[in-house]
Image (cartoon, rainbow, N blue to C red; front, side):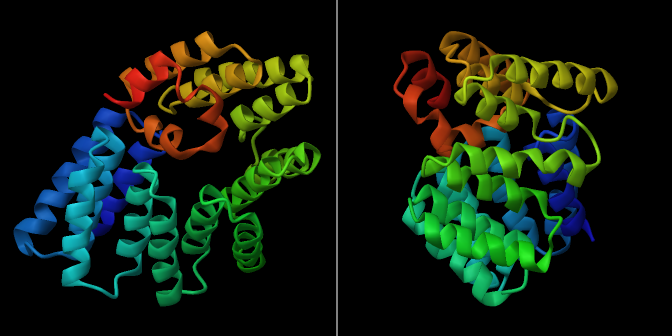
Length: 273
């Protein structure tokens, strides 16, 4: 039970769904209790690896920890999926594909594992493979929003902004709230020259921040500024968000939308922290 609780806390913190300090404190407590009962608890070790990546950006140590977990439990699909996350963080995209494939081979009907494989394929530039597994995930779970969002990015990567927007625009109804994926939607609207619609997404984020102050929205704001071509403001938002919630940098490290400004001195300094 402690390992399962740790997974929940790690992802609540890593995905910005609650205050990072609170989430990671609870994750550390659950991981410690699990390992006190069994020092080789592979789930607990895997959660420790994810916490190292999300909270500290320590990919080297995280990889060593998750590799140890997989020597203890080579059949742990979650361990292979988490190894893929660590490798994405390290921008080792082909290796991330291999790790995500291992998870899917162990559990071929898991939408989250298929989504991770789709993400890895996308980062490795294998868009057709990405769409194939993402569509498989959605055939199993049509309401799986993460897969819809990654699928949208694959279309954007090949220049089909209209299809990407169509997919992103389906997410608010699917999620049941207007601000769902407001950051990516605003980014896409900005790319298509619809500045006012992009700014409307910022207003939706303002409303959500008032209603759910525990949710971290700094990355969403930064993404919209990026789409609007406001590079310095986008980096300002990232720096502020990273001070409050370092886990957002996990996504910035591998997401292709940041590639045009990845060599900006302030971006390099931010990602090298």
